[in-house]
Length: 175
Image (cartoon, rainbow, N blue to C red; front, side):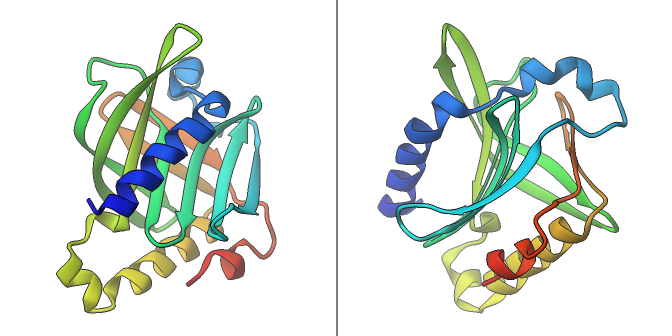
């Protein structure tokens, strides 16, 4: 991971952690086929990077950020694994995305908050130079914004998000 990506991830974790929801809070929801209650939000951060996030109970549950790196972040369900490499699946309608990333744990109000993070779809610098990163990211955003429901499957549970309700989210998020 580059120094800039590490610095952004570090800064991101301290800026958003106070407002981050834990998927542990939603553990009863995991068994349901009904998406979480909440809303989608689009904003540009201080670095002018586009951010699409899902917020429930005032806490960020899921975030896609397109800046110098493309970051995918979400609150992770409680379970035995709280740090280290992990693989998840994100279903956006007809498309399934297998993603390898890392779990990180931070303390919030005396409780651990576990979150998944991945940068640049796990691509190596060599693959990014081929131009496939932008294409793959745009496909992901297209699927995400067109899906009736987004289903994130982990070894520790399932997170269901409702359809993205921001009318021009696809245009604002595409590179």
